[in-house]
Length: 566
Image (tube, rainbow, N blue to C red):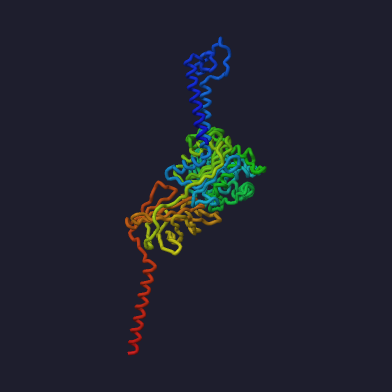
């Protein structure tokens, strides 16, 4: 129907243009009344002797109007699929997995999609996108009078600060932590080596006076979480659950804890994509939810205002990706928009002018391109129709497994795999993974479909923090699938659906190698040489061996008995 409308309008525009050309050749004016008026774009004066133009518009304006209508009609014909187009363009980025997508307008869901094996209720690691919630928690403490933006950090954490204090440390305030302008060096390695993160961070030598330059550092978000805990006596997740999340019906947020049992603040939080979309909607509504003001409007406004300029800082790395910073929130090149953004493509974008919220969970090395695509499509979402969007499932193509069971010993590798043991079971193949630390994991493998297993082991993670995963109350689920390829190669795909990380294994016993690909760095492959891959006898063969052994023992017993009689 839309194509019919487009072609009709274009046909009318062409016919009208031809009619105007004929009238002009006959000596009549461009305005269609015979007055001799020329198109205003030619800047010719109206022929006053002819009187006022009958229609008041020149023909080129009419043609432009008709062509504009055709363009609008053409776009209207595509708006029904705009969300699907956005999802498709994200998926077409190199090495990109789009796990979840939620689009909301005016608080209503326009589209929600999840790519199998990922399911709607599966939480997802949000990485640095969780800093948005850290900013909200600080706002609650400020509203309660427990914190002030100009409070000095050393006054709030006096027992953790060193006795010898630099003037830079003396000048550092809560505001500086919120805006990533602490003056401290980036020191994420602290979380991997120390059990006293606050002391280790405060003991560092500052590189600049606070408030003079921005240096994005996730440890400052942890320090904010520590300040809130110190000021209120409660972890930020407990505070958020009581005051914001549970009143919104969000009950699936889990957050890692530091060795001191403080929520990590800048990473390590998982929740569903819908929960992140709802938090984005809360921001869009300036802290109001179903008639309740869950957090002050002024705080939301401050969080989403470009703060670096207010501090007198000339940003040194503001570009299409870094468009300005508020309080734990990135601003966007799209006018008035802002976002929570995390590693590997976690994104919650709020576009107030269009009343739009887009929440995306990915695994991609191209998170900047994901942002640009969402920003490009966001204005079109203002007029997009609600629509069902399906993300194609992740799947392996190949043949079912018909070979013998196999055991592969592996050299040292990034995943900590020491041995892979694949065995046949009546209900399907079973993979047993032996890790370097001596623990094992048994994972059911599906062919042409995903098999889900409650995992005992923790997922692959690009953060080596001590005591990591502490604070996760639920375990992890691994979805697994396999396929065999020509030449005897066996491909295995392991996805931790409630964390977002995944590993693919290509076991080639003929070539004597195993290739590991991690979706945290999908454009890099880890190739391991194996020399002692061991085919394991089939179950039937073992029965024959056992039978022959039993017969041999029986014969020996018979011979011994006869000898005894003699």
